Image (cartoon, rainbow, N blue to C red; front, side, top):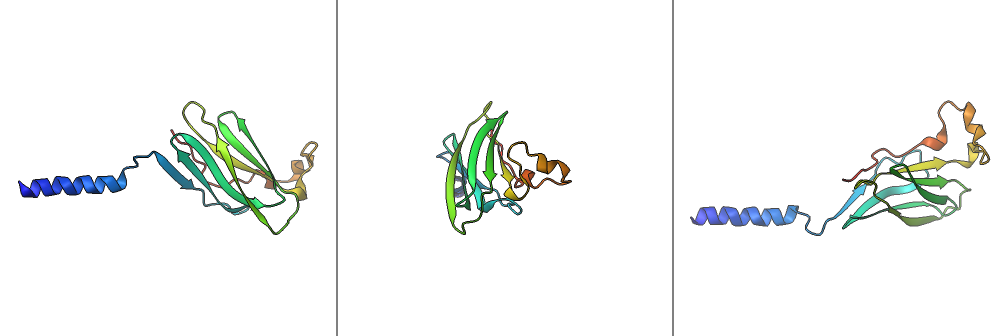
Length: 137
């Protein structure tokens, strides 16, 4: 009987280290090569309130919008200041799911009035996104 009680106690102790009782989770997107991101973005779930924190150059213009079911974050290159800024953007859920994507627009090949400069590029640079977009249910 002592062995069974000890086994159950150990099982409960192990479970307490693996169960997330406060419903907080984080996810790091690691593939940021070729983007305007300086550090890997971190997506956080704080009891159902989702946000993403990321670092970019001080001159990068940041905008976000809900497009369909995805929280699109637009990063527009605007020169290089050699200084960084860290931003946190709230994410909205659609049908109980949260998804996001980073859209990078580079000043070297961007015609803001119509993006016509990208029509002749075989692999548009402004469409690079980090791999591993997250969708939580």
